[in-house]
Length: 503
Ligand SMILES: *[C@@H]1O[C@H](CO)[C@@H](O)[C@H](O)[C@H]1NC(C)=O
Ligand SMILES: *[C@@H]1O[C@H](CO)[C@@H](O)[C@H](O)[C@H]1NC(C)=O
Ligand SMILES: *[C@@H]1O[C@H](CO)[C@@H](O)[C@H](O)[C@H]1NC(C)=O
Ligand SMILES: *[C@@H]1O[C@H](CO)[C@@H](O)[C@H](O)[C@H]1NC(C)=O
Ligand SMILES: *[C@@H]1O[C@H](CO)[C@@H](O)[C@H](O)[C@H]1NC(C)=O
Ligand SMILES: *[C@@H]1O[C@H](CO)[C@@H](O)[C@H](O)[C@H]1NC(C)=O
Ligand SMILES: *[C@@H]1O[C@H](CO)[C@@H](O)[C@H](O)[C@H]1NC(C)=O
Ligand SMILES: *[C@@H]1O[C@H](CO)[C@@H](O)[C@H](O)[C@H]1NC(C)=O
Ligand SMILES: *[C@@H]1O[C@H](CO)[C@@H](O)[C@H](O)[C@H]1NC(C)=O
Ligand SMILES: *[C@@H]1O[C@H](CO)[C@@H](O)[C@H](O)[C@H]1NC(C)=O
Image: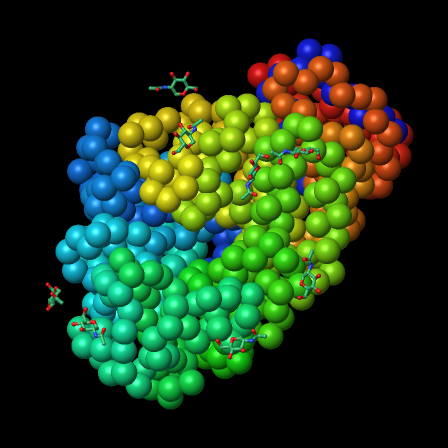
């Protein structure tokens, strides 16, 4: 019943053990590929892991690894959908089974004071694709290439607002397509209170440099068009799911109407660390939300070696009880709006442990491009680095660690004897130890993956021994250290040991 950390500590402080009985079945049945013929359901997303790219910053179609990208200029840097197609091996090499790309529609013109719409969040014309990213055919080809690899494609959708490069007022809509009339928008006012739903949902985001005219989803044309646009993206381009920008700034009543019309997985952005107020956007509305409530805790726990891990346990319990289904949350470590974790620390172990929490507890993990390269930009625009400047180095330690974590997830997801693991994806993880700086989480009812994490960091000495129970490993089981690639026989019920990988 003890867990021992390696005597000489390495950066391999995050490790995963998994019942290897599945391995036998794995050999007998290998993997069953899901048919891509049908549009995936919400349930099909549960076992996926998502790699988020900023289309303009991920890969150029010329394959350049030197093309400059000056972040503070906020200009297009040349990434395209074709560029993504050319670099799918890089993404699949980490084991990801879905990709989230930037919003796809045409942006406001030229270079406003705050730059170009390279990120895709400044809609001007919903009927036309953003030609900087490619053609209609390129987007179809991307979906095809992704599906050929049994992966899914998620598109970021901006359904709350358009954009205008100047101060807001009630006459700025004339160039918008198709919403070129005043009646399609809420009357101009900037949001003054983000925690007052009425104010946050009827006033406008943005500022005098870039005001974001707020669509009125109570208008029938607006409501219907947004639903048909989304369903049209599924029908015309085989899109499998959507990340819904600024979901908190649209009424839940509208999302409740929208969701059954589109019938695919939708994960909404509700930038709110309070699970009670954030999760209402999934309980009566979208399929899931980005797991901001857990993200603050992941950051505060793993980026601070002085923090006790009990903080994350408390928040985990709140999220699990407050959110309708915590296994449909989009659990992430970084995104385009927040400082990258590597801005806070150079310690690979801390970064790896934060990733392990997002990857192997509840929810659909989302890893932001560049995290695997230990990119360390702070806030926008610093956190939108050009990935090509890393030369797509697949030897980086976090790239390798993510591949290991995804291998464990995919082994369960692809198992043709899913019943053997079931319920796995809907089963809520249990924190089976949260003591000092050691956190142990088990996921899986009958057969389980147990994840051992610490925020001690690279230089930590021997952590153990710690007594843990409820691993669900029984005597005689062969368990496997997923990141360390070794197996061992369990001697005693509940036992789990850490041993070193001989690489
Ligand atoms: C923006 O560019 C598009 C395409 O080049 C053009 O049709 C449109 O009129 C332009 N709008 C403005 C406001 O310049
Ligand atoms: C699991 O399936 C996904 C998607 O079909 C695939 O990309 C991945 O390689 C598979 N993983 C394993 C371990 O078979
Ligand atoms: C609204 O914005 C337009 C475009 O910037 C400008 O021409 C117009 O004067 C503004 N109207 C008001 C009432 O501020
Ligand atoms: C919330 O915002 C609305 C619209 O801006 C306003 O009328 C209302 O008074 C606000 N409610 C509170 C409690 O501040
Ligand atoms: C999908 O294709 C139909 C038929 O060509 C078209 O009317 C519709 O606007 C398209 N929708 C999108 C989102 O591309
Ligand atoms: C979260 O929001 C709920 C509902 O507004 C409130 O009762 C609760 O105190 C908030 N929790 C925290 C930690 O602020
Ligand atoms: C993340 O953690 C760091 C280090 O503890 C802290 O300085 C920072 O404020 C946190 N970020 C957020 C958004 O809470
Ligand atoms: C780190 O955690 C300790 C202990 O909880 C706390 O006192 C300190 O303020 C935290 N540091 C930051 C930067 O949040
Ligand atoms: C964190 O971000 C700041 C601001 O962009 C930057 O100056 C600093 O170099 C970054 N830190 C690291 C470790 O990259
Ligand atoms: C790739 O990353 C590894 C591990 O950090 C490093 O040793 C190697 O030099 C890098 N390769 C290139 C070409 O930068």
